[in-house]
Structures are given as C-alpha cells and as structure tokens.
Image 1 (tube, helix red, strand yellow):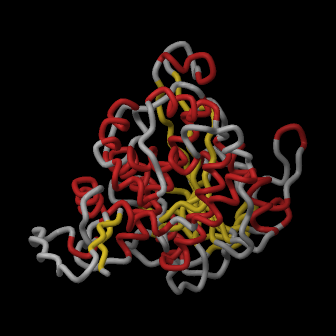
Image 2: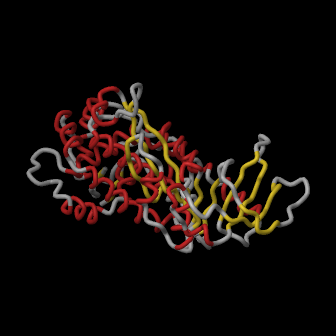
Amino acid sequence: MRHENSVMHDLLKGVPWAKFEAAVEKHDADRCVRKLSTKSQFIALLHAQLSGSSSLREIVTTMTSHEARLYHLGATAPRRSTLADANAKRPAALFADLFDVVLAQAHRGLRKATQEAVRLIDATRIPLNALSTSWAQYDTRSNGVKVSIVYDPGTVVPVRFAINLARTNDMVPAKGFPIEPGATYVFDMGYYSFIWWGDLDAKGCRFVTRLKSNTPTRVVAERPVAEYGPIVVDQIVMLPQRLQHARSHRLGERPVREVHVVIDNGKTLRLVTNDLTSPAEEIADLYKTRWQIELFFRWVKQTLKIRKFLGTTENAVRIQIAVALIAYVLLRMTHAAQTSVESLLTFTRLVRANLMHIRSIHHLDRPQAPRKPANPNQLDFALC
C-alpha cells in the first residue's frame, strides 16, 4: 500500500498534536463546541496564512474545494459565521501557548552549535482599521497594536512575543519577558532603562545597546583604538548613579564600556555594554546583528497576513498574529528539512502555489511528473 501527502500535510508534521490537544484541554477551548473544533479553526487560519487568503469567505471557498483532503488532516471546512465566532470568542492565550509548543519542536532541528545564545529585542506597530477603534485607538488619527519580539538570529525564529496596544511603552513587554541567564541581549534605544540593564547584568547576561546623546558618563579608563578604523572611542565609564525621583540602579555601582563606532553613512553610534573584555569590533558587530530582526518584521509583513485582519475584535487580532508567527516557524522547519530551494521566500511562494496539491516538499521547484499507473494489486491512497 502506497500513499502520498499534500504540502499542507507535510507542514503540519511540525505540530505536536498530543501537546496541541493538551493545550486545548487546558484552556477548555472545545467545551460545548458542536461545529468547529479548535483544530479545524487552527488549520483554517493556518491555511489562510499559507495560501494568502484575505477574507473569511475566501478561506471557506478555498477550503471547501479541498474538503476530501481536509478529512485526512482531521479538519473540516468551516462556515464563515462559525469561524468568525470562533475567532472572536476562543481564547487567544491558547494560540500563544501553541506557538511555544511548535517553537520547542522547531528548536530541535534548527538549533545551531553556538557558544552563547544571542537575543535581539524589538517591536513593530501594525495598524488597524476604524472598526477596531473601541479597543485599539492610538490617537485621534490611527489605531494599532504593537508586536514585541525576542528573536534568535542563530535559528532565525522568534522565541518570545507579546501583543499590546500601540501606545504601550516598549519596556512594558520587555520586563515581562523571562531573562535567559548568560544570554547576550541586543536592543535599540526603545529599551532605555538602567534598571532593566542592571537586571540583565545580575543574571549574568551581556547586553549591547545605544546611549542617548545627552546621557552623561564619567570616564574611568581609555583604551587604544586602531587609526582610521570604524571604532573611534573605546573607554570604561561609569553611568549616572541615580535616575529621576532618586531611584538607584545596579549599574551605578560598577563600570560599563562605551564604544563609539562610525557607520557607513558617516553617523557615529554611541554604544554601551557591560562586556569589558571583548574586542570593540565584536561589540560593534553584535549591535549590527540587530538589523536581522528588522528584516524579520519586513518579511512577515510582506509575506504573511498580519496587515489585513479577518476580525475586528482584540481576541481575533491576537489569534491571527499568533497563527502568523506559528506559520513562520512551520515554514522555517519545513524549509530546513529540504535542500532543493535555498531561499525561504521562494520556498514560501512555492508552498502557496502548491499548498493542497500532492507534492513532495523536496521537489517543489521541479515540474510535477505524471503519476505512474497504480498497480491493480496495490492499494493507492492520496493523503493530505
């Protein structure tokens, strides 16, 4: 007996369904559900992300045309009103937990051998339309939410995320993210908090960020720099010991390092780190890796569906963003499992074109060969 899988089926192999069911039970998400299970809702939303569907009606139409293959995925094609109700009422926290479950599965195959973990932190704003004014109004002109991400440049996936209103200060979710002892944290001036920097330092973490131009420092020692190189200043300094309202912080009691680096456009960046021993060039290179999270935000916004939302409630928006991040992790896992397509963007486009087709993920870039006539003595199954 031989069988073949659809591309969607291969992508869903990255979901540990036993843990998925445990999460559903934890949140009691399927209680009193008669028509659309959480699994079917998740597959419908994932299908929308991967196929590029931009409306509930489009999801229903495209999934109904593949209803026979959905059966083998353990899902059913939803009705538009039922899917809308599920997005509005089913707990968004369930899908945040599911992201953690899929991420743990992904790290087994994507983790690279590195001496230390590097974590990039940043946030991006996603605008919403006027129908979300009741809960997401930012000012008199616009609405929106802010997605904060802790990103691992080694595995090229986000490891933490938080969704807040666009007016929320970046430090609010940052302080809520657990600190990984010994990791290196790189972030920009949106996370300007001496107290939080001190918390990172106390956990044995290295941090690299920028100092504001008006932040005074007391020079303790000067270090030599190469003539005509991009590093123009390398010195040990002391930060101000007290902040506004007489609040003290841990870093006021120990020296830090200030490095000035000239970038390609001639601008000088004033970097600060608690790493007193590494070469200044390494500190500058670490800060340069922060652009990887900017590229991640651009990729997700241009490729997945987080600019146009299927619902206007806060719950529906949170669910759609969580599923978009899950879709990204599944694409990264599946892309890493094959070798024929090097670019993740090209691979994603091929997945979109062949999502419900019976194709091997290892040959998406090749013309599909005609199927061989089935042996009359052998059962033939085409599974999704």
